[in-house]
Image (cartoon, rainbow, N blue to C red; front, side):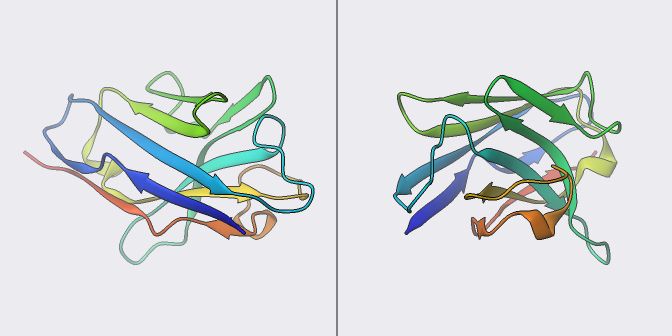
Length: 127
């Protein structure tokens, strides 16, 4: 079984930065951290979960709202997925989740295409 554990959330002022990490442990048939679709999602109060960024092999994907501000990366040696968030704005406040599409695929921004989730980490941007 693959387990995802997020860390790095917190409170920051607008314009600030935070770095989220997702530690990936365990195993599952067909799971390849280096190649499978791995993503970051967020859920704001009263809103549906939305895709923020994803990576699959050498390909990266970003929501328009975070493009040029957030950077997704993965350390294959450490089995860690990261999300560097810069120039944060109030609207970035949300619970952030790490997700894996084990032996799955499809549109990177759709939560239904992911079958393994972390417990989430809170990011709060406040003046």
